[in-house]
Image (cartoon, rainbow, N blue to C red; front, side):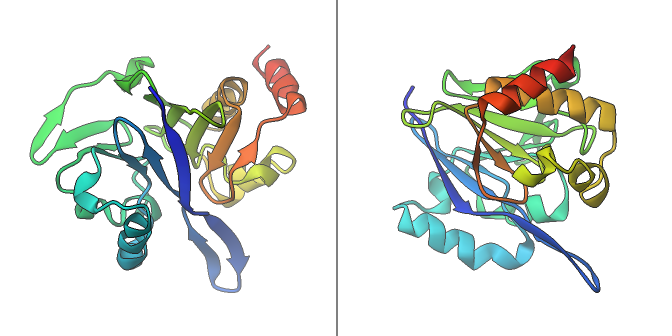
Amino acid sequence: MSYKVKVLFDGYSTINTEGLSANCSCVLISGPKKVIVDTMSAWDRDRIVEALTREGLTCDNVDFVVSTHGHSDHIGNNNLFLKAKHIVGFAVSFQDQYFIHPFETSEPYIIDDGVVVIPTPGHTLDHVSVLVRTSDLGTVVVAGDLFEKVEDLEDPSLWRLVAGSDNQEEQEKNRNKILLLADWIVPGHGPIFKVTENMKSNARQGLK
């Protein structure tokens, strides 16, 4: 299966006098299936529609919507995609039909050979990430808020305290697992980054 990953919008998070200014990364996965991961805030509707138009797509062309978790900046425009199956955290649904899938026992949800949704709890207890086998970048993981941004590898307070974590121990374990699986990671609130050998070495040490 041949897939490409296109970051439609880079996420960001900045502390300011009123709290935190933030929005999530929004990613289009194109191949045999069309998948959009994290649909930003409710105020971003037109931006998403316009970005898809630039890619020659409409909302009806999307087969799956994946929200890595249920925070408002990650689900704000799910209702644009009424022909898609929706995966929001551990919940899988289409219209009023919910499908039982055992994410709780670490079972991945296989969209096809090229796109797999895997449970990565920590930031929230039902957090998921999307692993994509691409034709140009190798393995890309769209990781939601499992990773806040690349800087949180040097400053863990960014994911532990600024972004917050429902289970820091689980999140750290899943971060290390993803670092070992991925060639590139799209974090929830920063640009895509390449996983270096030093990052992988540190992850191996962290899993011992």
